[in-house]
Length: 442
Image 1 (cartoon, helix red, strand yellow):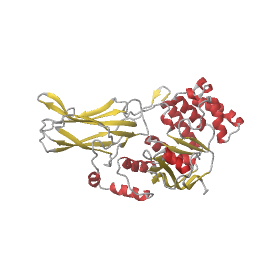
Image 2 (tube, one colour):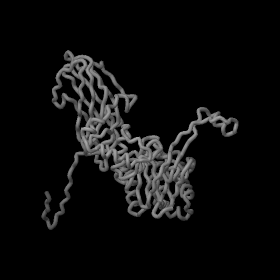
Image 3 (tube, one colour):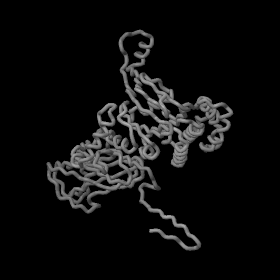
Image 4 (cartoon, rainbow, N blue to C red):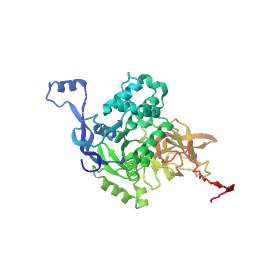
């Protein structure tokens, strides 16, 4: 292994055989047919990257990009079809909730089981046991079979074991999404301790805020291929384009792809011209819509502060939502609206042209409007849902012409959250009093 490399992945390919029927698998395994009975599916194809000792590396990508597969190959859970993985250091991995745990064993028994699998002696586990129990903080449940645990208790114990056995390399795959906010904060503090101690972290997450905050470098995967690797900000920007199908098509040519993106950012008119209108059902095929469709919303866009199409917005920046509306019949005084809800369906914020006191003149059949909503993203980091509406008053009665509920998700990327739904952007000053006199700062 080359100097200072904790993990080296070279030309890594993982192919699965997909069978239409179980009998086809049986026939092939018994040698009863010479006919090819399967379809090849590549979870990974020719991936290369190196993790240096002491680095915190993030891996991001859409569902099915190959993130979890690559971690399983690195940890030895899966065998690669082609290529090599070389690891220098003791690995502790938290890949899936409960991986490596025996559901019939108690929490204590699973601690010793996992420690032994990693290579610790019983005496070494004894020395670390109290630290593990303190970190997990699940009380007397540690003496009960883990099959009785809630998902939150389970992940507490699993993470406590993984992070307190003094690994040289820590690998985590989305495991923190189950723990409560206080436990997540404890885990991230442990991450910081690991980084200060010069240990290596390989981290897969859909939480782009955590990726940006804790990772030194990020690898972006898409459909089993590596698009690029680089700084968290550059890779998140590239990922945002991939999410709305505006990413590069290059395979293994990420540097060129990123250069193309940067070139596209030089001209605002060109950027806006390239933004594609998304149809109402494109991001969410199950979108709920209703109304008499005298007017119809036929397309929408979500653009970040650079004018790039994306549904991932950095907290504190301006972003724009556009709706393209076609009128099929005459509508007097149409009202255009948007609403943002959380994932539980609670309406967080929204507005419309009536609230904003914007008078919209009557529209005739065949006319088209583009409605632009621009606002600052002060919502807390997380996932939200966007809805659009076209309403008005017809013969004095409130009328819904077209509504699109949950047309797409909105991911607010944040490295700092406060309490509640949105950030008031408070400023805090701390002044020391000396000898009874108060020191003031402007």
